[in-house]
Image 1 (tube, rainbow, N blue to C red):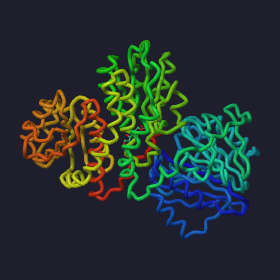
Image 2: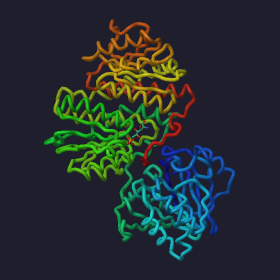
Image 3: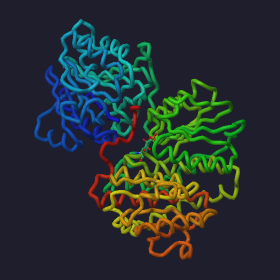
Image 4: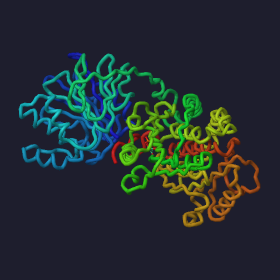
Length: 586
Ligand code: M6R
């Protein structure tokens, strides 16, 4: 949610292009509006635009904005509508700030600042930061002192950066619960993630409560007690090519196509050696969205193969409902970004209330979840930019499958075939593209699956909703007759996941029931020619795979179906409306 960036350049240089390059990498975090502010001849100049970054770019082309130090922002609106007036950077007299997060006590602060004569021009919570800093400067405090006073006063979550009209070579930046890195390269930069400081080769990850004062040649770091500190710089080892679209039109498609290699690397780099489940009497999975669906698949696997009772909880609900945690619980937090606030808070809650061990499954290295967990399994999917999660999901499932099957030789041997089978599914994309035409004009769709394919039905529906804006719901196929069947008519696509497994006959009969009420039934199956699968339906035949691995394989055609449907409807699949990749607000 929101991306922030900043660059300190050489005297008389112009950092605007570099800030824009950083914002381009951060646009996945929000695209309601964007803006840049720079210090120029003792003044702060800024440019802002509503909507995607290209609108700001167009404005920049018509402007002469230039400065040797600057900050930039790409917004996912929380407080205040996505208007130009609410776009960051937010100004007070001699200060400009960008902010990612939420200032929880902004109303009290606003009240005090208004009493002191400050006039608020935006609907944002961020404006209190700018005016607070200005108030302290006016009272005679230095920028650093003012910044420290700010950090002592504001409550909530933030990654924040400020520039000052009278400091042509300084950025002050701090974080609490929202990510922030300081990069070292040709310039010293700040950014919400590694991708935004990519001209840098070394980086410092700021921890909660820490702040940095960055100047042209130097960065000073301060701990949460504001004592100087000397953090270790880490080399950036991420593969930069991964974050380019290359030959692909959309990141989402590139990321779908990368799944065989993401799964291959994930298998290679995650060997389950220690006895993770020794003494564990219950597993508690905490996650949101797509990661939550990966957790539901894992519940089926863990209970079947590990024989350990497993609960899967929506992280945003968990800590607010007085849950009973119990003894010997192993917590598994699943999060692509590693920074979803709901998942982090729920996990921290369990940590505080119990002595449970916490493992995390994350895609982004060094992300916030790694500071909470005792151990992190990293999915090796590479940076995922498309807002709709694809390769991270199947990589999460791969690690969860490794955990579930690690004591079952007949299953562990089959991991090696998985990437090749995924390639075979990807080769069916022309068929799936054609299929998209059958659903692209629908106003809603239903996805059905049983057992581990039930969460895949939920995930398929979420993918379609997110990027095509067709209303879609996933159901356990056997549950359909208990109500959802009322939705089915001739126009509604019913998308059924029906691999040959113990429940094949039962799912096939659910399909018959759907077909008796609707005309647009689509079946994904590996059972070509089965008499149980009715004619008058559209069938996509997937490769045969042992039933335990089916959820990984069946997720892929549903991603492709959502992708092609959204394309047919003319949507921007990488930047669906109202969404952002990392959800760092509750
Ligand atoms: O980064 P996380 O895995 O914690 O994110 C959780 C959800 O916000 C995320 O999966 C979301 O549902 C995606 N947009 C799904 O495509």
